[in-house]
Amino acid sequence: MGRIPQIVVSSNLLERYQDDLYLVKGAPGWAAVVFLLVGLASLPFLLPRFGLGYLLFIAILMAANVIVAVGLNMLVGFTGLISLGHAGFVAIGAYASGLLAAKLGLPWYVAWIGAAAITAGFGFVVGLPALRLTGPYLAIATLGFGIAVYQVLVNWTALSGGRTGLPVQQLSLGIAGLTPTQQLYYVAVGAAVLLSWIGYNLARSHIGRAFAALRDSDIAAEVTGVNLLWHKTLAFGISAAYAGVAGAIVAQALRHLEPQSFTFLESITYFAMIVIGGLGTVSGAIIGAVILTLLPHYLSGLKQWLPVVYGASIILMMMVEPLGLYGRWIRIKLYFKAWPL
Amino acid sequence: MAAVTHLAQYLVSGLAAGSLYALVALGVVLLYRSSRVLNFAHGDIATLGTFVAFTLIARKLPFSLAVIGGLAAAALVGALFFFLVLRPAKEASLLGKIVLTIGLALLLGGTVQVVWGTETLVFPFPLSELRVYRLGQVVISEMNLGTIVIGIVLMTLLYVLVQGTKVGLAMRAVAQRVDAAQALGIPARRIYALTWGLAGALGGAAGVLLAPVVYLDPFMMLDPFLKGFAAAVMGGMDSLPGAVLGGFLLGIAENVFAGYVSFKFKTTMAFAVIILVLLLRPEGMLGRVYHRRV
Image 1 (cartoon, rainbow over the protein chains, first blue to last red):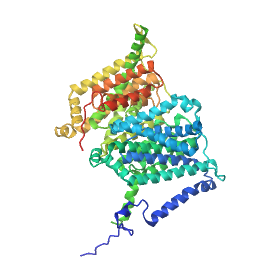
Image 2 (cartoon, chains in turn red, cyan):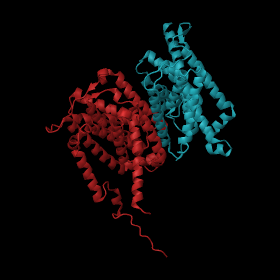
Image 3 (spheres, chains in turn orange, brown):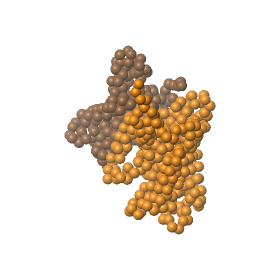
Image 4 (cartoon, chains in turn green, brown):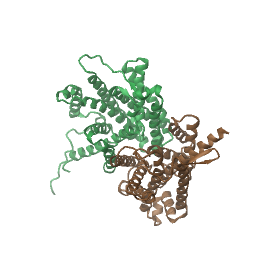
């Protein structure tokens, strides 16, 4: 009889089911959250010190992409409803926020909330066909929606400002010590953190569970009491509202809206973010959005290779690790948790 | 009298556009009904084939040989994708397979951009867009007439292949039920690869027919490919005659709409039609109603 090796799984053993539900687990978790928040808050002051002030603009776009990706993952990853037209929702959010501020003279935060509400309305409308359409049919319908929005913007010049584009008023927090870019950074990153936090909570609430249930089998979900009509349209509504807020951020970052910023390629890029980051997890969406915002920036010399890189990464990711980079990270973590077993 | 002429003119141009859409739609339906995969890379495979044909023409090859080369390249890419990607990942969910073809679309579209650049190129074609024939007061260009005729010839050939040959029988058997077909000794993998190749070649043919009209550029197939999908959805995703019917109807509807209502919004109209058809009859005009079980 040899010595029985003792299995030490982890020092912080979960004792109650509640422990497993907590969003932030234990002291290390809280330390990481505080570190992350402090880091994000100090970035506008740290970056210029290292001569990287231009990265602040990238960070704003990254915040917008994170919001779109988290919303899109809610739809594709959690609910299993495909959308290839998310740039359309982003465009609606961008133009709605710009027009509400310019034409009605609303303050920026009202315009943003209005943009989110309008986009969510469009999301519900696009979600209605989703009740009858599945898989490929839905992909086509949403793809058509994205392209239709683009074409309406190109051709309806009274709305989009035509060739000259639509100028967007700069937002102001009224804080004297900050440059406009820094102010936008705080608003954008604040929105991204808030919406990600909402996303994490949605995912573990009854709504998130209902989404996952109807992704895995909508008939079985309906039998167990999930209201398909409500949850499918809700998934579209939430996802669109996220895209609407991101659109408002993009509008502020670009300061000048043209339909060319919201093409089919953008929709595909959003899609690539969640596939590469990880379908069905909020963290995965965030990772994907961060990587796919930085990648074009650092590969700017190889710009024409980007679609090839995206395409190859998507194929590779689907074949090797369908749960994306975040799924791989979870696996690595599990491996070391039980190491050396 | 003039009104009738106008209508006839729109119908003629609609038929030419429709035969292109039908060719694209046939490729989509061929794949969908055999492997339940919606191939988002269909347009990009076609674009690649057209560009290969262009390069072969530039290398002084006779036109017919160059086109055959282009179609072969498109077919090869389709078959390779099946063997190298789709078959190893056969456990992938429906969403996963769609994502894989989206990846291929990006990869191929990007490759075309890197190799041939993004500038528009002129695709030499033996038929002319400017030489026209007159039927009464209706005018049809040589190119449009050629497109309609070649389209119908290819559709007939495909019909004969699927309905009248042993290979076609095997294709239909695999489409109906793979495991039963395999149990009867049909080499399902080879049939799948053949289907992918055939669909790629059909797309390539549509690309070659389109290239002289819109000039060559990496995104030239995006619009016809979306319309082809739309046509396939309209006709019913598992019905080959439905794809042809959907293609012609969409082409005609689009041109009539452009003529009478608004030229600018004709693509938007096409998508509105699809969403309407899907809402009223999700299985398409000629598709079978498909009952799902848990």
